[in-house]
Image (cartoon, rainbow, N blue to C red; front, side, top):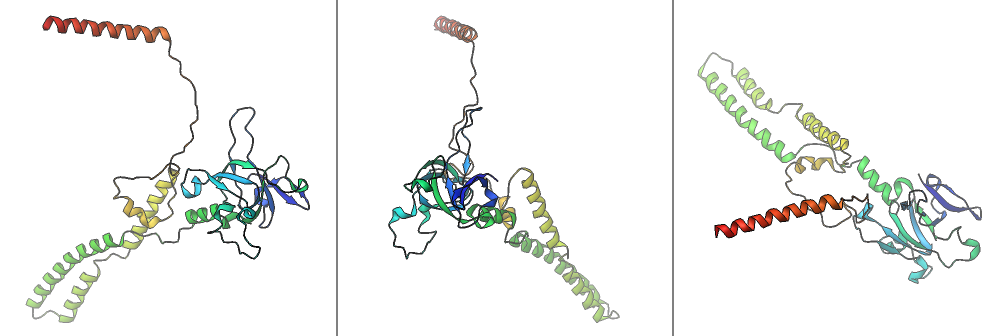
Length: 289
């Protein structure tokens, strides 16, 4: 949870982002840099917000993988008639999605009495929690819709491989049994059917699910979340992964970690000794010539 600035009872109040409700007027502004560390503080949009006043520059790489900043304009700038219904697919340029990073903001032209403290863009909250864009992504990670199982094609090939041996064993038992006239034909047929039907172990589906769950736990220990567990068996065949752009796994920010200084005396001495050895090599080359 983070601190937000909604307008309640005609005044701006600083509350927690968990207290936001759909329909609240909220101010969006970038958090100033930390005075002690001198580093900028990331400002995350707390919910899906429809811009009414002001403009925003957002980094949506956390949701879409696109590292290029997206400019969000207020809804009145589109010049839509009042009877137009809001469509998030068509009016996406006016919606700040929850979970995106706020890079820049500019205040709107609303009256001074409605201007938030410190300036900032003003919008109305559309969706919060698990109903927002970030919440839908979290629901996909936490509650996968597909059942956890193994590869159906590989399972079928494994069963056919066992079935070939079962048919061969049943045929051998049948041929030996028919050669004995005193043996019961009913029991012989029953034994052959038991051999064929026992080729598929009852615990095979459970073992395949346990194998996939074990892979999920191994990925979770490395902070890797799988949204589609049924693709894990296919991932074992992958030999090369290609990513189309920055923002999926990497970041487009450069952060200075420190400065490493090399003493000029040691660097110059080593360079001079290298030069001397190079010169000696040249004279040796000349003598050999």
